[in-house]
Image (cartoon, helix red, strand yellow):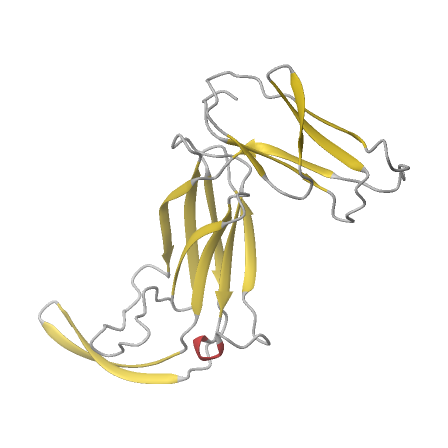
Length: 215
């Protein structure tokens, strides 16, 4: 632990075999940690060592075919510099022309998104996952048969996760007329469009998900 930030440790035993035991060395003793549940290690000093071990459950016979995953790393405590946008120069539909839902993000065919993941000290977290979730039809947002599409990206050394989504052809549900002004001219637009929704979700491993969303 280089920066004194909060850490997370979790032993994932997906088959729930109870064959594995996770322990943290603290104060001269090994302290057990519940399996399949994230444990936050806080109040650490800079460069403090954290020692953990995984061993077989002495009360059960071990099956070599069973496996576990050990997660140990910085807690993603916050995010910054989040942005979701369409192509440059998109002629936006104003709020006066379409109010509900408010069209926070507008694009022709391509969406670009980015977010920076930070630890409890505000430093970037490398290797964490951010998920861009997209639903293409806002009117069916509560229909379980129309789930979000997930686009998962791993953050780089600067804590940045970013990606692009091609929306493809649009079969419009709505048509509005709106005006814009440019170089002294009044332009009237008739726009056919589809309303969708998006979310950026970051798993903090603290039994919660943080993120942001829009339409």
